[in-house]
Amino acid sequence: MNGSTTTAYVEPVRKTIRVQATPARAFEVFTAGMSRWWMPTHSISPTKTPIAAVVIEPRVGGRWYERGTDGSECDWGRVLVWEPPTRLVLAWQIDAQWNFDPALLTEVEVRFDAQASGATEVNLEHRQLERYGDAVAGVRAALASPGGWSGLLEQYARALE
Amino acid sequence: MTYAMALTALADPTRRAVFERLRSGPVSVGEIATDMPVSRPAVSQHLKVLKDAGLVRDEAHGARRMYEVDPSGLAELRAWLDHFWDEALNAFKAEVELPSQPRRRKKAR
Image: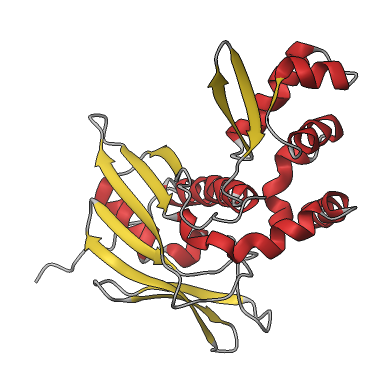
């Protein structure tokens, strides 16, 4: 492995999905309604507290966080751009070990483009992934170790059950 | 959450072997097919899946196309996020398209 991995460009993750709803409704469900669709398994709570709500405070600088059933809160990031109903940029500040890291900032931009049929095309881009840099070196080493893949794949298989 | 969820593409043992083969450096489809009991078309197909998962990238070297593990060191994380956003957006779509609740009319004064 070469040393200078931190400056390498990483292709953003880009996703497009078409939904049968207006941009206003799509934006509202994406943000205010995030608790209704976020996968409950995708929590970063260090105490494994089940998610009661996923909250995006509706303004630039607003917090993005999960609230557990015990009332505890875990930050995920914050709102960088708030332009309902067409555009949203969130800071995703979750590190490679699934902890909130205020020093790490990757961007998730979501655009809601109206289609002629009354549908909306939702385009999501998760970018600046290179900022993870060497933070994932440990993960990579674990994966490369003997049996690393198989151990993880077993975990994955168990998670699917 | 674990990175294992990124590894759907690697759940296939042959594909995993192809990926492991790339760890030693860039190789061509032909070289992989020579080293392993897998046909060239099958190798190409496995490489396509790995590439789509963000684990591998390719580059033209003269007439040959060479494949290598994404050298940024972030391949697994990126693949996890790629898979993650697919799942999340599908769940989002299902929620958005639920039949809307009956509208509550404002009472006429």
